[in-house]
Amino acid sequence: MSSDPWGRVDETGTVYVRTADGEQVVGSWAAGSPEEALAYFERKYEGLVVEIGLLEKRVQTTDLSAKDAKTAIDHLREQVEAHHAVGDLDALRKRLDKLVENVEARREERKQQRAKQSDEARRAKEALVSEAEELAQSDQWRAAGERLRALVDTWKGLPRLDRKSDDELWHRFSHARSAFSKRRKAHFAQLDSQREEARRTKERLVAEAEALSGSTDWGLTAARYRELMTEWKAAGRAQREHEDDLWNRFRGAQDVFFAARSSVFAERDAEQAENLKLKEELAEEAEKLLPVTDLKAARGAFRSINERWEAIGHVPRDARPKVEGRMHTVERAIQEAEEAEWRRTNPEARARAAGLTGQLQAAVDKLRAQIEQARAQGNTSKADKLERELEGRQALLDQALKGLQEFGG
Image 1 (cartoon, one colour):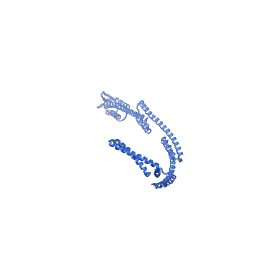
Image 2 (cartoon, helix red, strand yellow):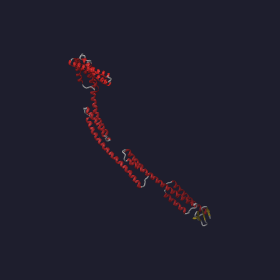
Image 3 (cartoon, rainbow, N blue to C red):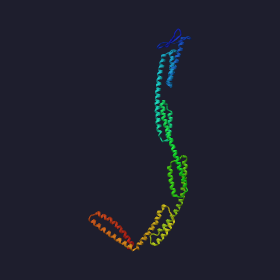
Image 4 (cartoon, rainbow, N blue to C red):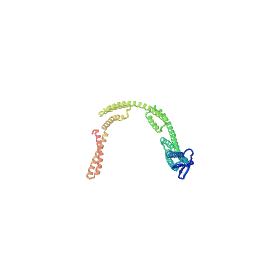
């Protein structure tokens, strides 16, 4: 008989293994020595040890499913329970029991992990839905459209939830995208309509601008072009393929008109500049008549100068006040000389002037006496008031005395 710590072979060749429940028959051995029999079944035990070790490693380091792990454990347990190996079978049972615990722990861990991932995915999809519903109301068509497309890609990368929850969230997400697309389509349809209306309006404006381009009614036509430009700006933009062409035609028509007007105005400006030169020469000739010493000769000479002045024509607008002012100054001087001559030769006017002077002198003398009296009485306010009145009367008296002098006395 042969034995080792975990098994033995009896005289009949029966091989036993020792367990906590006592000896169990492993099998019989007829070919070879008892030592060879034990060695054979010990190798079978080592094989089980290796298989259990490999399974432990797979459970620990791979994503082996709990179901597949349990199947593998059951298979190994059947082999251990069959007692066809010599070794510490109780230790193998304990390792298998521990492995079962590990598998259950891994399964629970994965369950919790899946629940956590599902919860995270739910929150992520709810956030996507909320953003999509907010974007559905946006008028930033390009930016919002690009963002919605990015949200779809993000959605595709998230795990699926349970069918009901996933379908409900997807329905809201899809509805938000559809609502945005519908609004965007309506907006651009309206924009197309507005641009078509702008195109028709601008074609009408172009037609009128082109019809006016040959006009020589410079003032009215220039004003109408300004009105057309205001209408052009108010019309909005036409389609891109029409806008530039319409603008070039519109602007080109204006350019034709304004170029022609500029040419005419340039000729007119040159003519008026020459007229100004001639009128300045006449103004200089007229100014030589001053001061007036011979009224009759001055009057005749000024009449001749004025006739030539009227025959010349327009001068530049900004130069007109100055050159005309020079002529008016000479004209007023001659008129004043005529009035002075008339006063000198009119006895009635001299008498009226003398009478007026006498009246004013009497009034001034009276006011002065009243002022002295008021001051003597200490009535300062009355004296001041009379002083102001005296200033006005004195000014009238001075003017009357000057006029009387022009009569020679």
